[in-house]
Length: 394
Image 1 (cartoon, rainbow, N blue to C red):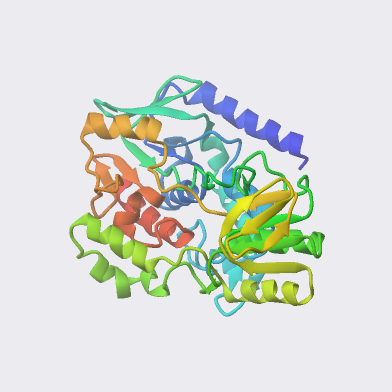
Image 2 (spheres, one colour; image 1 turned 45 degrees about the vertical axis):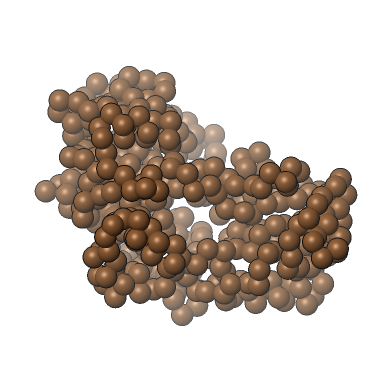
């Protein structure tokens, strides 16, 4: 299907929703159509919720738009998660499709995962549930919740799932005034000029360095503050089941849970095969890898604290995201008006089924004090979706 045809199809679906459903109360509204929101949507449909009773609100034209853009931008060939982690409640649905897997954990290729997700969207008619708009507020209603959007009339439902993600605001240190964050929407790697400086030591920096050095051999320098942290996953596999979660669920108060999450995560780490690929490119002379702290920069060079200097035309920062509460513009008024419980870090304190208040649920970053260190990744999305679907359809 041509891109213009795909966009037209999506526009038809939105118009269908406007004409047939917008005035009716739906059973469940999901705010956010990324990995977290679409996993919840697939789980709800697989558990028996009719498509006409589900609405997915997202500002983008199609599901998983941000995820697709980011994985494409850095040329990520394989996901970090294992083959059982995807949008469906059936752990082996991806494997049955004969997808391309890598390594002992059978990590799916990015394209296989994407194609599987698109099949699930089509199978469960989630394009007909899609409502493209930006949420501006949520209010308590007599029969549930009212969700206000930027360009249309309010929508209502007895159940609302907040799947807003936790990686909205890219973080770039102020002293790097010429640096552009890898996930800045204005950045096109193919439009940037060599030589490149890539800043960061995590998985986005590593993939970006590989992407650029294979296209501009010898024209890329990767600068990181610490030695590579090599781990298969971004937290121990013990957090995927009761081994660690049983003790985590007994931790009180929530501030101690936050501390445990920080201790359990492995930020800025990369899987083993990516580490070896970086080293091969370095040995071939295609990539320079430097460990140090940036002291200053000028038009044509970057200076490190040890006195070394590296020429550049483009500086690309792979330095993560701010840790602030996502969607603060409308979440903070909601928290205030409904007296919603929050920990000192500002994140929700939820019940065991991820309810914040009757009919209001959280997944992803907003649910990490209940789901644990894996909350933001695909495995965490599945765990949250199982809990929420059981409650919504009870």
